[in-house]
Picture (cartoon, rainbow, N blue to C red):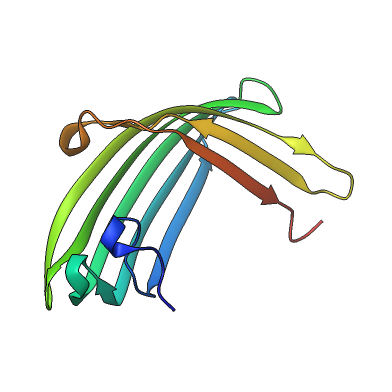
Amino acid sequence: MATGDADRGLGSGGTGLQVNLPLSVQRSRRFVTHSNLGATWIPNASGAGGATASTRALNAGQSVIWLARPAFHPLLELAWARVETVVGPDRTEAADALYLSPGVRWAHNLKGGLQIVPGIAVPIGIGPSSGETGVLLYLSFEHSLWK
């Protein structure tokens, strides 16, 4: 099943595999860090004009979360990615992206242990992504596996 629309620059046009390794560490009573390393492989990605090739991508992220209030957390994240795109039959080119994202998240704690965490951030391109900005909306549903 294809994902996205490669002709419009909105995805790879192919199904793939992505793995990520997260790590969260409570640094102090008020600060937490989150790290993430990942890789993506799409064996039959599409490019403009219908060309296909196998593509790979690597990503890394590091964030610092300030536990300002029990359910309100300002944060700062640095995210990097190297992504291949299809440029011809069985040909790819790699490009880097680097963003610094200030943001905030807050929590809604429900009975039964479910926590709903919405957030918003503003990714600002730096280095190879200089001049790019956006808005990132975040929504997480979190529940403990064990009581």
